[in-house]
Every structure is written in C-alpha cells, then in structure tokens.
Length: 357
Image 1: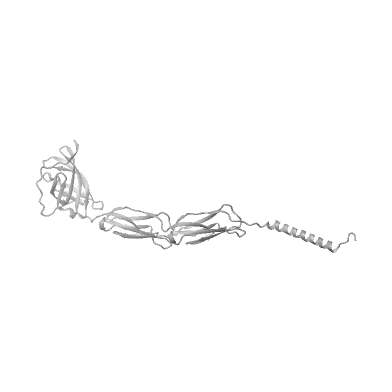
Image 2: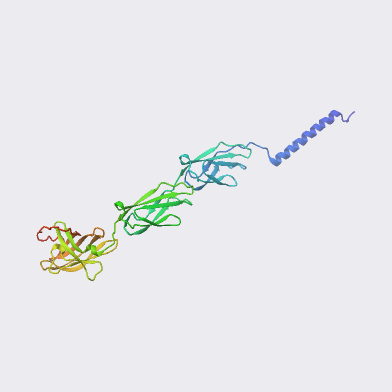
C-alpha cells in the first residue's frame, strides 16, 4: 500500500538515525577535545657550566628548540644530589657533593611528550675540580720577632670550606673564624732562615686537599744588647787593610757607642759616635760631627749603615770631609780575635773622592 511503512523501511531509517547520532557525538568530542595526534620529542640543549668545583650548587636548564605543552623533563645525576626540579621540570638544581671516578659527573636528561613519546637520553659530562685554587697574601720576607697576618683569597668561595694552617719555623698565633686568615709570629730563627706555611682546604664534601706551601725568608734578629758592641773590634777598609779600634759606651746617649780610632788617623782625643737603632731594622747612624784628623785638619764625618745583633758586626759607609774635599769611605767592623797581630800600614789612603771643593 502506498505510503505504508514496511519493516525493511523502518530498519533503514533506524540505521540512518544511528549514523547521524554517531557523527554528531564524534563532532562534539572533536570539538571539545580535538583530534588526538602523536607528539614527538624535539631537539634540545642543556645549559650550565661544564666545569665546577666540588661542593658547588649549580642550576642546569633545558633549552628545547620548540616548547611543547605537557612535556616532562627527567633528570638523573651519576654522583651528587639533585636538590630541586622546577615546576615546569626544565631546571634542575644540582649539588656536586661527591667525588667520582676521574672527577667527572654525568647529568642525564630525557623528555616525555604529552602523548607519552620518550626521547633518547642526553648525557652531559661535568668536570668536577676537587678544590678551589687560591692565593695567599702576606710578606715573603720578614724580620725575626715580627708578627703578620696571612690571608687566603680563594678562586671561588666554596660555602662551608675549612682552611687548615700549619707552620714550621714560626708560631701560629691565631686563625680567624672563617679560617681564611692566620696570624703568624716569627719568634725564632728557623733552619736555613726559612719558615714554611702549609695550607689545606676541606670542602663540605669532606675531602682534604694536598697542602700548598708558602716559603717565608726570615732575617735573623737577636735581642739588642749594647754591650755586644763594646770593646776591641777590627775595622776593615778595602784598599787599605784591617786595623784595631776600640768602642766604648757613650755615657749620655742611648744605644750610642764611641770609636777612638776612626779612619786609623784620629787627632788627639778625636772620637766618632755611632747610634744603633736597637730594633729589627738594625740600622747604624753616624750623625754629622766635627772631627780632627791626625795632621790636625778639622773636618767632619757623617754616615749610615747596618749592624747584626747576632754576629755583633757592623758595616758603615761615610762621607768624610778632609782637606777641602769629600771622600766616600766604607768600613766593616767585627769583634777582635784575641792575639791578632796587625801589620804596620802605610800612611792612610783617604778613600774615594766624592767631589772637589
């Protein structure tokens, strides 16, 4: 009958309705969530130093060629500790607290995309220098009895590092709370006149470095005693020879001695005075003073030099004004040896003329 529905027609219409409904649902799901597509890993680099010091804490950062939403970055480290990973997993904070074979630590980074695709591992080798380089400031030449501070300046400040000090041929008086400064007293005369300062460093990782040695030359200084410069001495002048002199203590001036045979040619009662510093500088001063020579000429003398409080010797250079001219004269004094016989010298050479008057 025209217009009548048969079972066959009804079934066809049900199939069309089901297909239409499926298409509508699929369209709705695609509209809501999009069509799921495989997301592949991208090329990436990792930024951060290739060389670090033991105990340093460093950030390493992933730099992908393309930022893909939902990517997760995985971090592992062969030796050391991952202290933190950022919320986007691109940055890892790594503490290099352990020594490894050959002092190389390997950082491994992988990426997992939003669809679960995983990259191959990227391995970053990092050279770990066990200890910081450093310099030590402080004098390398000192006088016995002096006290000085020696200060460490590390190439890099390693938090928590401890600096160890040992001293040979001197006295370690104090070490600062941060262990970077040591106060050293050179109270003794060391073997070969050399003191040794030995410094080690121990980072928080607990491994102690080999010692770095600093040598300090110590000029001997013996406690000054004016009496060591009193009595019979020998005076030596180049191009003239050696002759006896006698030193006495000045009755009024401190640390001052009196020579009764200057230039081996003094006039009657003519004397020359020398003042010794009495400190670690060990200097001799001959103030400008009038002097009557052996032939009665009235001139003057002044000079300066050094003495050795341990050997009781002196070396002095003078300007001698005689006969209208200035002469440069050099003398060395040593304690006289008992029984020494001095040769008879010719008339005194008058030294080197400095200038004509």
